[in-house]
Image (cartoon, rainbow, N blue to C red):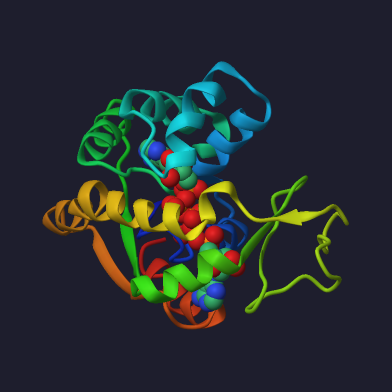
Length: 217
Ligand code: AP5
């Protein structure tokens, strides 16, 4: 059983580490960013509602995001735990999460805050590329695809995320500091917070994360 939150500013590597964690500990990755992007791609009501906020680097309203997470953690595959990636992002979301889990007799086991300086984040996000079809993640410098501009997994085109332009990244960082960073203190006071240097190589960060999680499971 493992219920974990990966916290940290945009581009610290939450998605990268959450995927590895999900495969290693056999728990689903719940990424609100991925769910919202999927909804946008499919032009659902949720996607259309979220679009305007996401392209500006602002947060989608709490009620919308809490609703999709509540629905997701209630599914069968979450009975053995999950990794939350990109949620919660406000104190209101964290409070709602605690309430929704308590109703089911559950609670978060550990919160890991990935720490990376802004300059490194900007470099990571400006070089990030994602596959148009399967969403696989690349970096033009640190983890490029084997063949130029094509996904290793499915062969489709890779592209830059709309919110990875430098101006929007700066806005995302501002929003993070204002609305999400207070969660570090929130979870510290709950006694759940662990800190991890996310600026190291992916494999080194993963080793550090495993060191934390192996003590919890
Ligand atoms: P979301 O998709 O969650 O974006 P984010 O939090 O800004 O996080 P990122 O996906 O940009 O970065 P990451 O930390 O996952 O890093 P990654 O592993 O990809 O949210 C997008 C938008 O959706 C938000 O702005 C908001 O509008 C909305 N939203 C989502 N959740 C919401 C919520 N709860 N409430 C309200 N609104 C919400 O890595 C980045 C790059 O670096 C990659 O290229 C990767 O290959 C590379 N990399 C990773 N680790 C390393 C390493 N150790 N060394 C070198 N390179 C690395």
